[in-house]
Image (cartoon, rainbow, N blue to C red; front, side, top):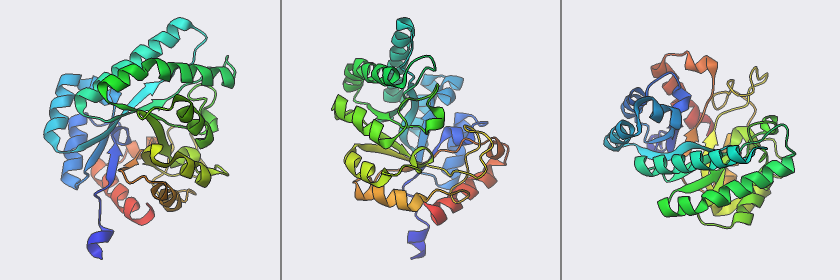
Length: 274
């Protein structure tokens, strides 16, 4: 019973949860604390270069879950739309090199465009990079973001919209990233999770604090807010998802904490609230 309760076998943590640390420092911390999975943000790769990142990740013994991020497809400029596709293909190449099976897409939006136009640009952009992702055998995960980001970060704001775009593309290489922080409020969340089924390629956890002082960098530790994470996890598992559970916390407060203390808080919160 105790062994089951202390099961961290599905726990992964995003490197941006420990933003101030280098990739090597994060890997060493995860190894010491028995964290089996890691999701890598491109910033941490670029800090030391792809060759070195590939080497230390390969030697770490950690399971690389995904690479963040590609996307940001919408733009009133055709040149910028092309640039976004090229940059996403670079992310796919980086994911292939470090052994990440998935690139998470923050799909993008532009305030001067209608949401409908932005969504069309997202569809067009994913379809344009699809041959590249098929060639690399790296999946793309469409992550719906909370509507507070609909102006300039993503025009895909609900599980329904994510399901619609994934259905329209209809490729085994394109699925959904379910982040409880972004979708916990949805009235039809359970049914849309069931609709997504095995198209759910990743599951991210953190918590929504009340009050929230910053829409991007004030996420809570699991159990610190109002999200019923365990219920949403149960729905995802009923739908067929049994992959790693990834802790993704953007927090100016936690970034200032001692990493050894912070990671213990994460492990405790994972057991109690996830």
